[in-house]
Image (cartoon, rainbow, N blue to C red; front, side, top):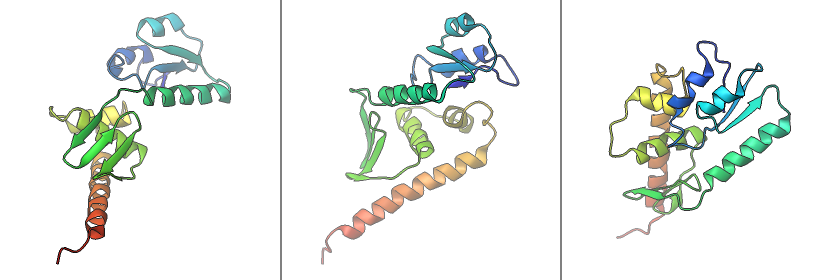
Length: 166
């Protein structure tokens, strides 16, 4: 969800930059003040909520996002023994689930869906954390380190459970 009442710019200017035609997960928009709903919708917003809104409205938006995330037919991407199921938001290594935070999953998803391209740190920060985080390299480094550690811990756990070959 995007709050159109951004401190530095008009939120409708951000809508085309969200890549909404490629990423339907960020398509509901809201605004603190009355504003022009038509301008937001013309800019590409999928929906429009005014703030403050009832708690049920936020719950309905979360339910809609869960349905979007469960669209059948989204691929399961693999890299060696690592699999990322985009529709289930599940990561496995040799069939064993890797427990990731939502942010770690979003980071890994972005990396595997763009495996054929170079992605800058700024792009990762902007895509995963959003506008305003493009200079927060430490956040990215910590999350990449955690992601690597969790995958490696799962690999070690799998290896230790294999029968001894002696």
